[in-house]
Length: 324
Image (cartoon, rainbow, N blue to C red):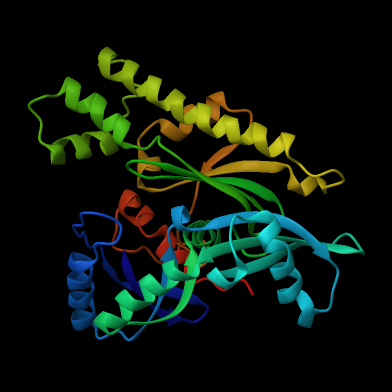
């Protein structure tokens, strides 16, 4: 996903959207990706970029460190990383965010760790095509930047639903406490439609999925049954980590650390009726996230994208949000 923005007053307005696909035989096969990125570089003449690191390539956790001076924070976090993550300090790059200042003797921090060779892999690819990366953010933190309002101090659960997976993150005070990937994505709804509409093309199946409310509509009983079964699988996963967030709440943690709501994001979150179903069966409020919340007000500007298409750019949007 590629996006450029222009500044207008206090807003960042998207002016270029591009979605590219590339082929690969394994995680290290970058030949076609390099070809496609070089085409982007030549098309837009961009030099400096910001980019995301996939959640699957990173390790995120929360930790407590002694309350130290700002100049000693980096060393204090580095000291506890090897205790918390299966890594060697010399082999990783890390970032952190202080999420709780309330204790006079310690800080609570949200830490993201990425293997150095992963970062170098991406740097090498970008440099090969002429891009200069100035910032990398872990995918889930980019999503937080996009959909959690700046200054929000409460805890939320963010569910990013993609075609073949869901990334579930527990967020407090704008920092990621926990993130996991589960193998339940929007593709399971495609399977129901393919089975019941065998003569339809994949394009027609995709259109049906995002225009017809098969969850609420009893017109097609077989499809509704299938959609409801899969919607319940989504519910089970969200509820599992909602319970986890409650049972793993730190002793003495402020009441704001209790998740206040679920923010549902990702193109597959736009399946008609799915959010309404989750609202009716979960014990925590559910809402669809606003991809552009921290860039501009959609009442004043409307990108040339459908709502499902805009959700493809949630991580890209979050790269442009500065919380520091």
